[in-house]
Image 1: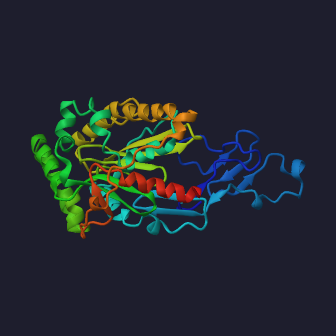
Image 2: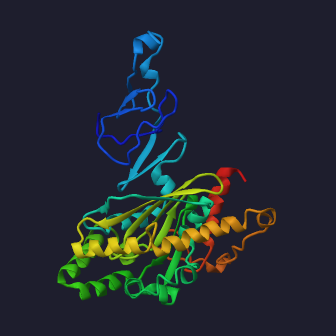
Image 3: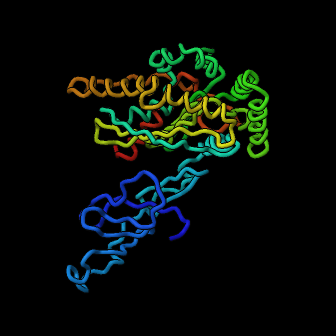
Amino acid sequence: ENSNIRVFLNSCRHRGMKVCRADRGTATEFTCPFHGWTYSNSGNLIGVPFFRNAYGEEMKKENWGLKEIRNVQNYGGFIFASWDPVVPTLDEYLGDLRWYLDILINRPLGGIEVLPGQQRYKCVANWKLAGENFVGDTYHLRSSHASVYALENIRQISPVIHAAPDHMYSVAFENGHGLTGIEYTGERYRMDLQIAREMGSDVVDYIEESHRRMEETLSQAQAKVHSLSFGHVFPNFSHNSFSAFRPIGLYLWHPKGPRGIEAWQWCGVDRAAPEVVKDMVRVDFTRTQAAAGIAAQDDTENFEEVTEATVGVIGRSLDFNYQMGMKKDYQKNMPDFPGDLSPYYSEYNQMGFYRAWSRLMGV
């Protein structure tokens, strides 16, 4: 009925049936397939079968609309919602992470285009393992993803994995958010430009124009970062974007109890990128982070086997080791770059993730 973004619980107010069972579309009305109650796209109950015979004048339709989330906020096209009416504003909640999200949002010349085909899969694992993996676990890359980085084309696009990581950092934020593999000297831009030169002048023009636009719309410091690596917005939204030639991966980890996750993931590209780059990105996502990709299977197997191995009485009684990066002198001070910086190999971000979780849980 209007252009506002509105979010509802997908549950009929009569017996709780899902009223919408499609992932996308332009419907203006939603009819429950169980008993036929119909709602407008603004959530109002507008149709009840046999209304006069079944309910008479006793039922007031205006009291039985879909349950709406009132706290819905938009940041650069990413929609965040919370049932809690007293949460802070989105700007307050994201805090200094916004400085880095602006890089993710603004580097694509034409904006982020999400390719059709959301992927969903389930794994028998605790959702927090996925969260801490993306919030700061660079330590697993060489072991878990050794087969990925043995591929020649991946080595060409992501040589930083095989380089000394002294120039790269993990960055922690309030409220449990974190990024890792952040590089502040312009190396990721130079790497993209080198790859572009091998692909042709139109690709070079695209990379240079993308970077020029960043310098005009963002700060010089943000332009030097150029592209994020991977990170996590607490509690359950992960993302990665290593290069203009790698996919913008978007991941939601839906908890399904203490030993269950339903993963939703999307592949994003730059809408204005040359077709050869879009094709490269799409194939890369399919090969690595898609449900049947190498990296995704590496990760989910880790999540499942950690959960299985620690579910017993003895396993649950043991502590994990989070000593890495906990020494005070590990923290770095770089005034132009917000957030709490720690070395590339660190568990500082993971500890921030679990501190945020424990505050919410009251433990």
